[in-house]
Length: 272
Image (cartoon, rainbow, N blue to C red; front, side, top):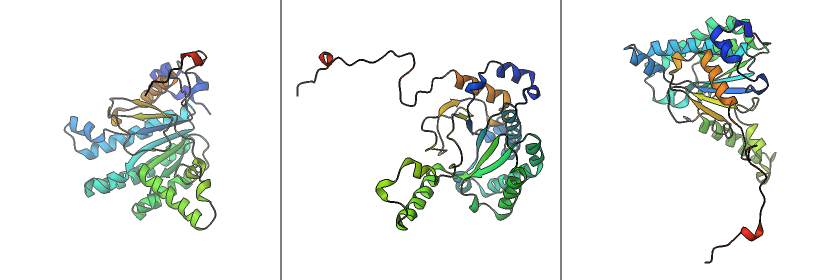
């Protein structure tokens, strides 16, 4: 159910330029820049993460108001877990628990359900318990599905999918020469989700960072210089507006290209 009247006046101004029939079904965001946001203000990194959590709340609420079906946020990578200082990782786990505890009611008020992708079984037990609680508390909501990628890496996701396929082959439930893209898809963490239409990356970095490598084959990418703690609902709408200006061709030709005719007389093979 749309709740356009709950948008800010600035958000409504952007929303009114959009074509509702061309809204993306699934938006994914690489949330980058918490540490730099804090550094630019001579603050400790944890304050950047706290402000980033506030952005998650605000962007999710805007997504729910415009009826966006799927929103996926890259919250904590496998590399973060392995390479960040342990004190920072522990803080991020406490922040995740706190975010879930304080925002489940807001999710219910906004008809948002929460899910997770990644090797979440490797996270601390008390964090897993809180995640499961939040998922159960919001399971009946029918609006935006907020998916948090936690302890996630796209290469690891593909490795896990390959292991599952190998087991099917070993158990003689699948022939190796019959493995299809659909078989790979059903073993991905995202098997119950559509592929993203739009991928947003904050902080201006021009890289994918091991996020949804299989799923973004035909995804439109929007990069903003804005750091994640400064990203708001209006910036989500602006990214969607830019998305709607693009023509998605999936390997085909533009609608503006005329019919291609092959003239055998024009084809010449270079002499060896």
